[in-house]
Amino acid sequence: MPEQTDSLLEEALQALEAASDAAALQVWRTGYLGRKGQVSELMKLISTLPKEERPAFGQAANELKRTLETAFEARQEALAREELAGELAAEGLDVTLPGRPIGPGHLHITTQTLRQNYAIFAEMGFQVYESPDVETDELNFGLLNMPPHHPARDMWDTFWISDEIVLRTHTSPGQIRVMRERHPEPIRVILPGKCYRYEQITARSEHQFYQVEGLAVGHGITMTDLIGTLTEFARRLYGPERRIRIRGSYFPFTEPSIEADMDCILCLGEGCRVCKQSGWLEIGGAGMVHPVVLQNGGYDPEEWSGFAFGLGVERPAMLKYEIDDIRLFYGNDLRFLRQF
Ligand SMILES: [Zn+2]
Image (cartoon, rainbow, N blue to C red; front, side, top):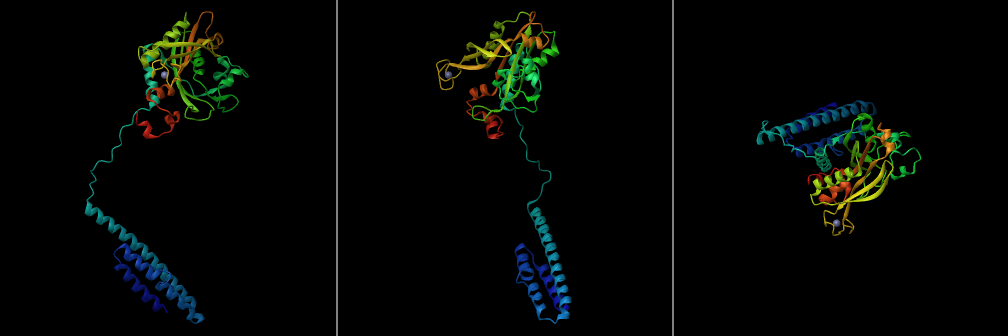
């Protein structure tokens, strides 16, 4: 019986050597190793043998099968290598060709908007002051005149990290930080940064967004300075003909508090869909720094006064570029981002 396996092995290896492409290899595989191939047929003979010869025959047949499988894989690899070498030789491989260029990126629309703000405020003497996104409850609320259980805390849906730590709901905690760092010097800073609110994400609202907070502390600073600053900002950003309207408002950390509107840049005050027919667009909340907040920052409210304001970043950009969905800003869709 070993003669049978030996002759089959020899024949199969010769045929394998002769198989010179993938199709021929498959024919060979089916013919020898397939379910009805020659090796299977050989194995069927085992039942016709006398009992004592069966183990030796079975062993020889299995060995044959393994040998042929290994030879098949080796031949397959060799053919693949030959094929690749042939292709390279035919097409030529120029290793000196430059790689595919990666184009330069550009600034995100939010970054561009922020930098416009920085430039305008820098010309008015405001420095940029950065403060952390993760804040203590005390800085985000308590020192801004909202002690625990103060009802005004409900104005902000808050992400709590622990009982004491929050993702800042506004950039205002930076006011306390900069006052404590700079006192008793006068202050003129903007505090740009991301804010976080536990809110449903829709086309109109995101759970993270940018604010640019402004703070000025000095001797004899009045509401007139605040209104003048906001007016100047709006005119530099949206054109010298802009008009500003002031309405009374409420924030726990300013007294008195205001909301500032400017005449609608789309309809020039006539009334349109964007300004809801009012002719006015809200640009931000502001007010005179509350005496308690000044005190918490280390300034004596008898001697010092100041104003603070908070401006949006994404919303004005939406107006300017007619973007109708705020979720596009941080959706990482290059088709959107490349437009700016
Ligand atoms: Zn309008």
